[in-house]
Image (tube, rainbow, N blue to C red):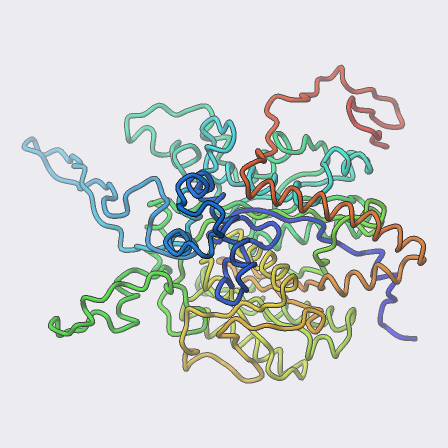
Length: 602
């Protein structure tokens, strides 16, 4: 008897991506807009114009475009000045969308006064780190809803979850009414918590700065608060909730919880995501103190722009901030980024019943630690185990040929000297073990920086985007691979490449986090997922699904167009539908809740 699971068995465990959304340095994620910004140079004119229209809305330029253009009906892609402005102020770049001045960061200098007492004098200094993957210039989530002094990470979580829910093309009230309240879960969080002035950062600084600690700072700073906000203000969820924090692997940790829940049958809908807003001067200083970040000086040294002979012309050349992140090339540190990404995952039955969109499906996620370590921040052996298990599982489920010639990897690719050698050695060793030659490797951090907990969420929306238009993103910020990088059995993608989406049924996501938090996942393409769904249906059932899905697609497209035209507000329902004890009915069989179509059964 074959050890391979049957298609029917696999599909009973299917975890299908039916919607996704969020915001990163590339703009809005849903409908591929952020991904298209990343591969902008490889798009045709129509695709570029659609991408720019979405970006203009994110940057608050929509009204300016309509009102000030001398040619109001001319596409943004033809308006050279506006187009270049949007391209220059998205992705990785010099600071331009933060609330603090990178050239005047406050700090205190100790001194002894005339009485011999130690005192402190306020001074200012220029940050050594002068670039980051900031959200596009002009984007301000606080202005999009009644934010009530929320930390930026929670503002972005509201944006991301709202975008993801709307992207499904089905109203949340309709989607949630088809399942029991306890068959829904939200798993979302952040690695760094909320450390700005409205969160834990403000709470810790208040006394020193002579300010009052607010009643919100402690509570809103907790790491699981992105999930709490989505439950309380976006979905009204009474089902399962929480987060599993694992440094840079946090998103995949939460994705693992979602997969296990749906496969077990406990949940039928899971919203999984992360929201990280680490672009605060204290966080930048903290990572820089670890020598983990690329500074302006290091970046110029990499390109030979600060020669010892100051008379040489290269010393006057501008710093190439837009290529600060160079995975697997000669590099000197990673680039921080901010990102909030959310995904709507459903089981097979609900997907077919409602005609939901299929953006792919989650094969599985594997998590392992490193064992004993000398340095808590150094990599270890755990990532060999996670990726090896993911490859073996993909081989068993989709087949050896699909693994060997139809898969590629979104590397962690943090753009540090230590990562480039250790991660490439892992890929090379495992490719040899599975007899893979020329395994395609890319790294989205070249464009989006390192968004910490959201890093693999960035990988996932890029994976969906690649399948949707048939373009693999290249590590275009680098001219060549570093000499100490293992390249046996591997092919690093240095330029954006077109490909036939059906030819790559599998994509791997890899995460290597501080502390020994390793996670790897394999994702199955929309085409592969669709084929399996069809095989599980009768012809009549499949025809009915396609008919329903056509309507869902139209509704989703309508949301996308309205969002790009500034006609949609975020889904944020503060104080609406608040439940009280009198709104529930209890007996020994279960609980009924006012406003919910189904009861919870004990």
